[in-house]
Length: 122
Image (cartoon, rainbow, N blue to C red; front, side, top):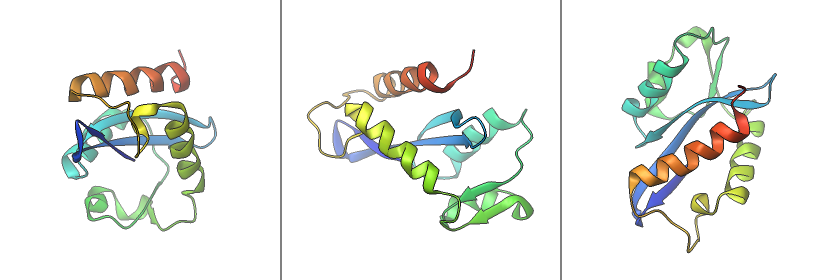
């Protein structure tokens, strides 16, 4: 899911891992849409036993193990629903908005705080 800082040319991507049984985000990372940001997310998930990964066919996902990687739209409906929920609840994630961040740090902290408050189990 993408948003921007300052203007739409400065895209920031929100990468997150969704746990279907708990129906919660269990880890998230911000950055560009590339392997570096995916590796940040994988580091956060390294202590967990991930059964499988459901993604689209983007080239950065080549890092994931093939035997646990499912590509396509079969299991992504719930993730897209969560993206819609986040866009509705956070003005900064809307694509046409007057409420945007001027710094990447503030952008990440604001969205990260919301996700931690709403999704992470204490």
